[in-house]
Image 1 (cartoon, rainbow, N blue to C red):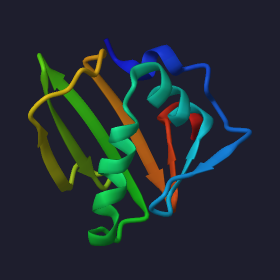
Image 2 (image 1 turned 30 degrees about the vertical axis):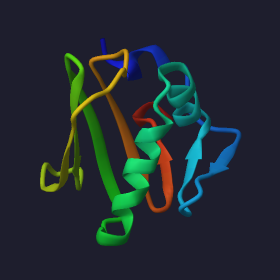
Image 3 (image 1 turned 180 degrees about the horizontal axis):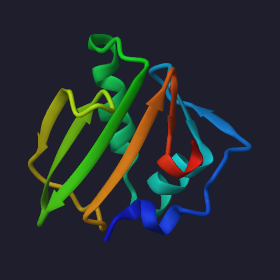
Image 4 (image 1 turned 30 degrees about the horizontal axis):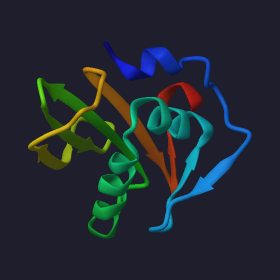
Length: 110
């Protein structure tokens, strides 16, 4: 199951929430983190931002049993970051978060 499929009704955001490391995120990303208990994913994404200069980024989490891989690209399949997660209780098989400028959002919110 793709977590984003359960959040398609988020197609814009009325609110923006500030992450401790400076990024902001939308209602849809907040719902993703709340429903799937993955606020840690925002921390992971934010931790890589000082090394990245791309204005647009695609972050994809793919679960394989109790492990996962998080990959970031520039949206044109040019790999930016890959990080292995040795254990996760993430309940979906995958999810995608985009970054546009300084904002983390779901693809359906674009």
